[in-house]
Amino acid sequence: MFLCYSGAREVRCIGRNLLLEALANELPSGTIRYMSKVVAIEESGFYKILHLVDGTTIKTKVIKQTTTYV
Image (cartoon, rainbow, N blue to C red; front, side, top):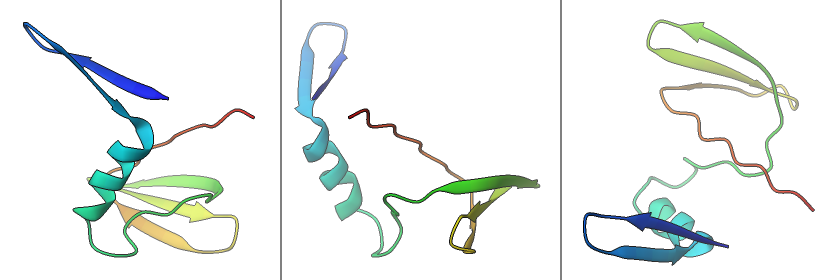
């Protein structure tokens, strides 16, 4: 899958995996969690508190959801 962005005069495409890898390399280890199932989201001021199916809770400012269809 390729993600394409168009600017004023050009279009650039990048593979989804390359984009995710580039973003992950700029974040501290353990920041990104894959394959996590969220059972509830609470609001707490500017933050969201995620409750995962395994009992883990995460306090975050940013949530990025991706869905993969098989």
